[in-house]
Image (tube, rainbow, N blue to C red):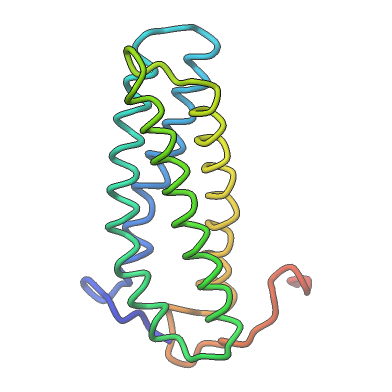
Length: 160
């Protein structure tokens, strides 16, 4: 099925997700650099990138939800899309909690829990990103009205 939200003939959701994914992953890199170097600028940079990533994620979610809503019920694509979307909302919540824990600290210094929530969020992003790829690359969601919405997982068969 083709995307319901397009710009210049292309699906909007895949165009928007690169920003929050990159920002949230970069926040984790800043956290790791802070842990290694104890540099005072890294926690501040992480906090700003988390805030921007959460906002970007919420913006990207709207066209994703509209596209998911249009997928026919009872299809594998609908189930994969639900897990993809729910996982992304979970990772945004985890990063929001991480940000809130930092906001109460002096100079945005992350507590151990703030780091755990951020690291868990980026791990989930890896899974939900793969699921998004499964929707587009294997199931053809957002690409073709003749998409194989019941196609098996790309993990279940080898490509030749």
